[in-house]
Image 1 (cartoon, one colour):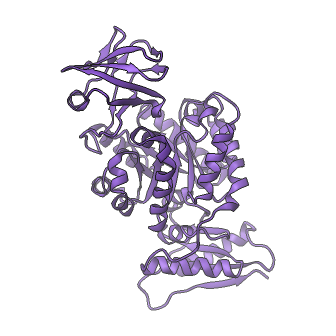
Image 2: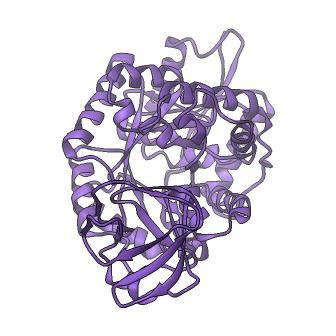
Image 3: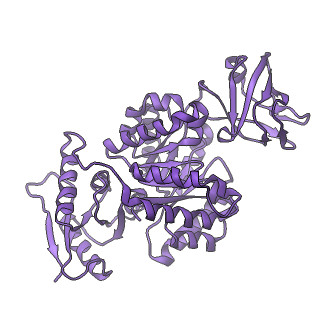
Length: 458
């Protein structure tokens, strides 16, 4: 598969056997959601993946999503079952035992006004504000549903003045750096400056090589999209939160805009949320879900992330199998035009190499130390097999989420050695057939000579 599958770990995937089967079915990377669980649970998930990686002699990426500056409900003793048109109150309390919705956030009560729409649970729960008092808001349910503790809330079209990185996030970042995770998902990012702040923190923690995946999920992120993409290593289209900030009918347009912005800057882009949501309860997806995924694949996404489907759903393995089937059936329809992205010499070199290999129907191997050139080449979506070889396992793990790349671990001291090591590894693993051609190169470096090899197995 060229389009990658990223799966979220949780209660449904705490069994190492399940995780192992998911990898064998095509999952190339995993996500841990720092909004749920604790460090002991996260550590168990991480150990499971690393052990499976070693057993299967594969390269598997693992990252964590920061909780971010979200506003969440307090403690609710018993789930509140909503009926349409039901009236209830939101109160400024940490917990409530009287059937009200506890929301301990002063700013909420200062910015909400009658007529505002409050959304939760990726938009599945919708409340209309009827009346506002100093520390109490009367609302009417627009949808049936169930409200439980710690649900994130959004006021459509409004944003809370909360830092992108909270004190709680700093603890999660320390866990991620201490455990050598491969990427950090930056939630509720609003500008490129937020990404720079996280980059500075990672550098101070000695993890400057950890990738930053910025999640586009709020109004400011869409407004400042170009700056965020420029500063990030990867982009995630968080459709659930976007669907709470924008009308649902605009989400396909925004998804296309975000995918295109990321691709034009040579940054990997992943879509997430409600991909196969019906499989939380059912063993097969709906036709609408299959069509949605197929359109995303054709639009050129690098990867598709399963969230609740594999974290808490009833059919985590079946969700992976279905997603793999949809990808394999539709990824030949990728309709991204092969053309230079801009005047940057590194990107033009990447375009030239991709076009060379494609024009002679050759496979392509890139030796890379940081992963940048391999990612740039993949952005052009060439219709050939691409291998990314490196002596750096951290680099290879980050590349597990990049379209079309197959990571290969090699031993090499420099780029020239890397090319030969990559070629020998391909022969060893029988990735090259008789009379098959392969182009081998590496990223542009400041030397008087650059090597591009074309080899044919004889």
